[in-house]
Each structure stands twice: as structure tokens, then as C-alpha cells.
View (cartoon, rainbow, N blue to C red):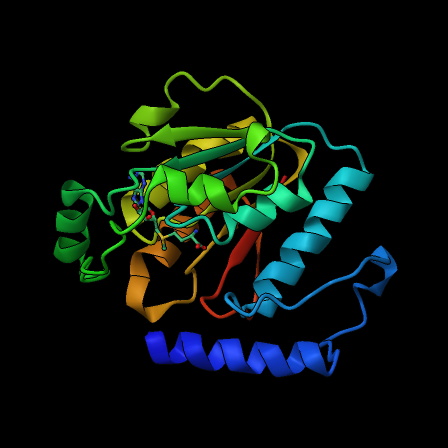
Length: 224
Ligand SMILES: C[S@@+](CC[C@H](N)C(=O)[O-])C[C@H]1O[C@@H](n2cnc3c(N)ncnc32)[C@H](O)[C@@H]1O
């Protein structure tokens, strides 16, 4: 992973130096845009930026949230593009829950072995450009959502595992504003097969259609 991060950093450096852009379709936003050398998933970030502009321009009301924050590298952009909105940050900040891992192994969805415990709320909040808009919900989801009474315009679900993805969709979709978006990461990621199972079960049960992205971990988008 360190080698990939280093390659991304170097590639990003040269792309920025040459002012190379993969697409011109974001030029209409008419603002300076730099490639993030520490997070080279152009499709995921550019899609978020476009969706944020759609929601903000159409004045779709609601807060935003990420379920599965880890170090906050994606949440940092949610906070930037939705600078006027409350951002809920849901995570244990201690990695996966043991009951979820046991379930993953039982269903042969994933090994559940990836370690996401090397983070802290402090580290995450330091990344946020509009930290006053952030509400941290630390602990096991859905328990941490019990006192959340709000409406959402945008939600990113990135918990990797079947159970919190399925529970997350059932929690957030009814609270999603009309015109709002939910991104679910890892839909087309063979290392986390439960993501696709959870999304497809939820969409089938609720008669919802979806759009898949060719970003690095295969995000799927659902809307209302
Ligand atoms: C892949 S990481 C998130 C990466 C982050 N969204 C990004 O793009 O940089 C997955 C995170 O989901 C969290 N997570 C998984 N299941 C959870 C649950 N039931 N409750 C709270 N957090 C959970 C883990 O602690 C981990 O930090």
C-alpha cells in the first residue's frame, strides 16, 4: 500500500505541474482545482464535486454524512464541497466491529482483516476545512444514530462490510431529501463482496435503481 501511495503522489505531482486534467467537464465550476496527491481517485472526487454542485445549485435541503470515515480523507472533501451544511461523521474510530467481522467470514464476503484502527477523532478533525460544521458520532453504527433526527441531502456509506451497509441504507434512505444522493463505496470491489449484496438486497426490497461508477473501488450511487 505504501508503494501505491508513493506512486500516486509522484503521478499527482507531475499531473499538477503540467496542469493536466482528465476531463474538462468541471471547468464550468470556474474555480482553481488541484489534484490531491495523497488521494488519487479522480473519478470518486470529481463525481462528489459535481453532485455537490447539483445539490447546492438546486438548493436541496439537508445535512450531509459519512458512515465509515477512517482518517477522513474523503469526508474532508464532503466538508469542503458542502461547506454550509452540517456534516455527521460516523465511525468507531477503532476499526471494524467483531460481530460484523464474524458475519462477514460466515457469509464469505470478506476476511474482515483490514485494520482501520490507526486513526483518531483529532486526526480526522484536523483535516476538515470547516470543522465547526462537523458532528462526530463515535461508536458502533446504528447505535450512534439513535439520537439523529435530521434530513440528508448527501450521504457516503463506506463501511466495507455487509451489515453496516445494509443497516446504513435502511437508516439514511428514508431521511434522504427528494433529489438527494447516497454513494456506497466498494459495490464493485471483490475484496468486499458484501457491499454489492447489501445494496442489491436493499434496492430490490425498495424498488430503487442505481448507477455504478468506474472509480477505484466501484462506487454505486442511489438517488431519490
Ligand atoms: C474503508 S474505511 C473508510 C474510508 C473513508 N471513507 C475514506 O474514503 O477515506 C471503513 C471504516 O468503516 C468503519 N466502520 C465499519 N463498520 C462500522 C460500524 N458498524 N460502525 C461504525 N463504523 C464502522 C471502520 O471503523 C472504518 O474506519
